[in-house]
Length: 451
Image (cartoon, rainbow, N blue to C red; front, side, top):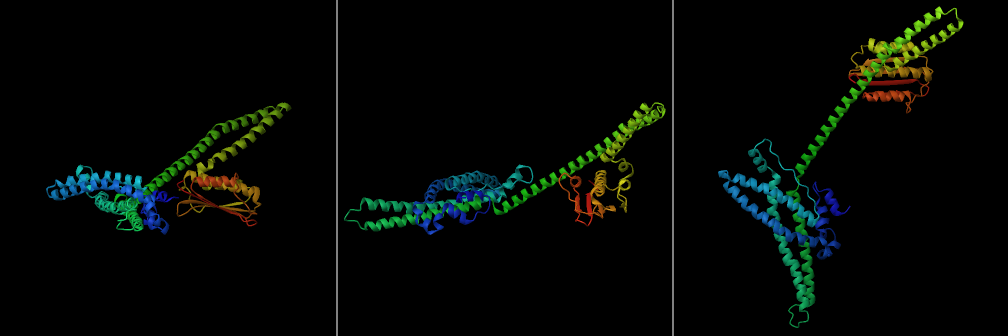
């Protein structure tokens, strides 16, 4: 990164003096740039900005002195207040122009400050905000300080660099004259010393002007800290708002999905399942009436068996979508129903009511226990399982499923345990699986009751 890029990157902060030294006054950074000061680009950039700046800042300082004198003199009769306001408002475009000039001539970047805003509507509050704005007063102060620095720099340019050129020209023009009061080598040495001192003076004045501009035309460290804190607070508020919105939409989506599952369960239970039950009854009656026809009886027997198997599958499907017992009798009864269907003996412990948990939380708990018991029956080789469900003081629905099987369970991607972990995560819950090989499996799940 070059020095000007480094300065640009830090234009909005308190730039160290060393950065400005490398940019506008390199002669003060080492002996090599010190020796090369008369021919350095920073020197001639400083000469250029001195010529232009003396004119621009000089006019601004003159206007500021006149308006400030009038405003202070007439403030007693109130007329001075609008004059001071006009002066401070005019200082702002001057500061913008001066920042642009320094950037164009010295490659120095200074960020614009934030001006004080009125707290109330109305022209008087606006005037008071302008009069109370420290940055605008700093701009006025810069016009005075900058005019002094540039006037000094103009003298240095006139005496130092112009004098060096004059000595060099005089030595070349009259070097062969026998009446030379000073030897030519001494004139040339004087020209070099004058050019060198003039270059140092120009670079030093450029540095002084840049440092003054940074403190008076740019943002103050206090203002930057306040603005940074305001932006950080705004970002935090925005992030908090997004988090609340995402939580609400996620909760609504989970609730909608749970409601849709209940609707599908009701439709299947009240529609296709009831029709299959009725069909099974009719087939049973037809089978009894067709006992005299062996072929018809066999066909009806087969159809009856298929209906019963389809009905059993449909019941399992309905139970997997959303168990009716969960809606009708609550989570504790649903857990007892799961335990009754498990081929491995299950002990269910529900020390208190679970109805404080939302329907989404209860549905998640039901499916966690159902999947865990299925895994125990298939893979654990366990002889007993314990299931505990409680409401914690922090208003979480807490499940603990433990077995005495062979352990070694892992929620690999795509597995049933991985699906359970995703379901719990969707409710902003926690999923903790402890399954050491040969020591059983212990699954602890907590979901917020309000999920």
